[in-house]
Length: 133
Ligand code: THU
Image 1 (spheres, rainbow, N blue to C red):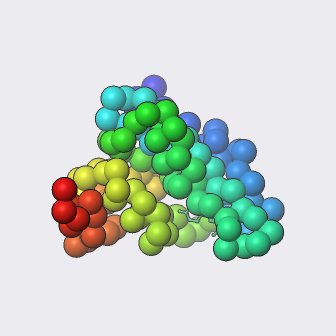
Image 2: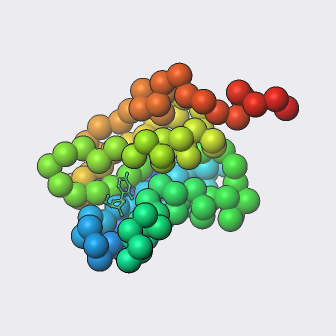
Image 3: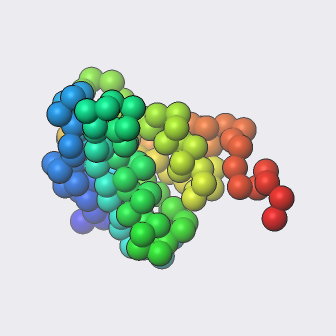
């Protein structure tokens, strides 16, 4: 199994634990941190709809909780005919911990559909470099 297969499988596995009773749209995300460790998370919805959390945010929380700070690549698994790319807010969340070259693998239940870089998804991003040290 390749590293990418392993990352996609981690995202697919955590997707099974998504809490999405309102949208019924389960999403799983898995991050490979720069040291090679994997960190996964699923979407967590809430009856107060705006309090819901995307899978990417959950995965970032798991990575940070594990003491890691840099993302090497991400896999996102969802279902449906359309490509499931991270929402605008999550692109910004990813930017905090990832360089523009970082690959984001967009997957369906049957595997990889398309890989885009963070820079393609969020060009001319505002980020930590914009702020004074
Ligand atoms: N969602 C994610 O978790 N990640 C994405 O990349 C797109 C959307 C979630 C949010 C909400 O729980 C459900 O999918 C429907 O929007």
